[in-house]
Image (tube, rainbow, N blue to C red; front, side, top):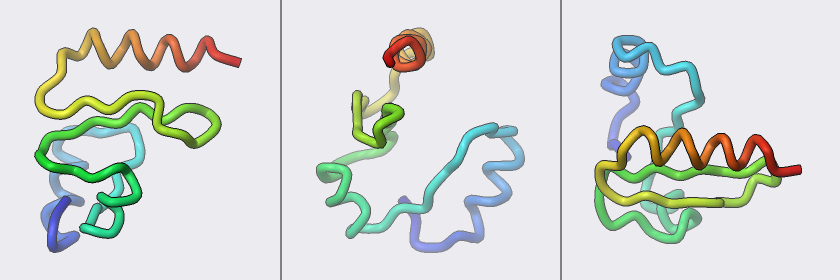
Length: 74
């Protein structure tokens, strides 16, 4: 969630993110059920639906387990 794309690109490159990052706005936040605080992390299944939403800091092992579970789903 940002007002301008300019800081996103350098941040993305600095942290060598190897996944898509979207720039959000209020309209997009509503599509995702509202975003009341940052950070927020979504795990999206192969079907394009939100499978998990984590508000605030989340332990990487929690995200890894969620991703593994989604990858095993048919």
